[in-house]
Image 1 (cartoon, rainbow, N blue to C red):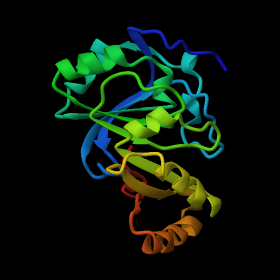
Image 2: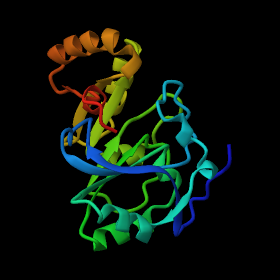
Image 3: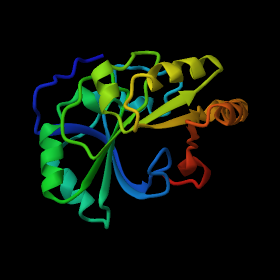
Length: 207
């Protein structure tokens, strides 16, 4: 896999961008413009966007071009996702988007240092490449994908590293949802500091 420089960049590889509803976590159900950046070195076996892994496969956009695309819609909230978006330096992106008056959220595994200035950081740690502890401290939302019973212990490990105000979510892995959802339900009943996150967008068939 190609190494992606962490130096500041004007152009970013974009797998896709679209206006939809946030389907997961704290902002579920809200209108949001998603920008999915190419490049990922985490490599989750159950990833549903493996086409995002190779950055060089995707067209490059300037941050100004991306703002122009967002401004074609009524969107006020933008979600930067991936791949693993923090493989790129995002200082220029967040500066330009903030100047445009947009709210900026990021979804990250936390495996790379945080760049840019964010209104909301959703940390979704992965066993394939563990998050950095400083990123855990910055998270507003911890969202752990549950694939099997051992993931609850993994979730608690990172719940102990985030701030006391961080929202805690358990989310069934989509292909294992029939098994994982009842496990999560019982776990939350016994550990009510957690909440359920479901991939609403897949149920209502939006991007």
